[in-house]
Image (cartoon, rainbow, N blue to C red; front, side, top):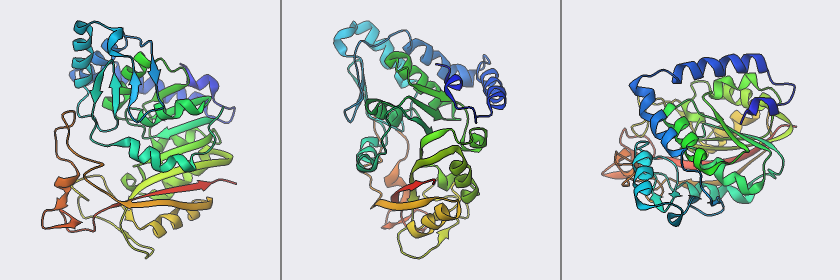
Length: 319
């Protein structure tokens, strides 16, 4: 779908189109890095599903009885081309995709605070393969736009939705840094697992704030360190083996960031320690996972010696 036609008049459409065209020229190159994901995406799109169910923990796209065993093998091979699978779970034509993250747990935690999405324009910034976008479908949003600069995740979502055919879901290759092109465009914005990857988190939150309509809502989920002080750690190189992690705040520090960015009605509605039950290796993600990121002698610390992470959930609003 062409989501740009559905944006409000405040959107900087000409600049968005230029960015989109530039990104599409980039991923349309016949180079191995792009074909690696574009080819399985095109394969999956050849199998439109008769049944789609986004109400369960595992997003269901198609049933095993809709296809023959040979086609099921083709689909599974294409799905495995997108490994490692970080977000899920999914059930695709009877193939259970057991992702690294048990993302349904995060969805269940935020569901009691989920704003009314009916007929709303929603952004999921850093949407990965679109698991949470699919989970929004039963709530009847007018439009959900996924922002995802990773080629792997972009094509994974395109492949999944090529089968699911959900007309109110769209994705682009843009990131949080392009949000200034979308002033006052969104009723609700999800920013989950992103803010600690920004070298200037308050500036990023200000961009998020400006992209919301008056009265709009932000759902923010993040890593955090335990404690009640208004502080953040700044890792020398990595945090829990993850490069590109900048500031890891306490919940109170993150609340201050939100306030400084202009948000009101800020509510911390969930905080819990991370767990290897929630993030772990599977047959669909065979690399290191959460257990490997901790000090083997002291699981209260990361491998680098920093406090092991909590996850925090905030709701905030723009007046």
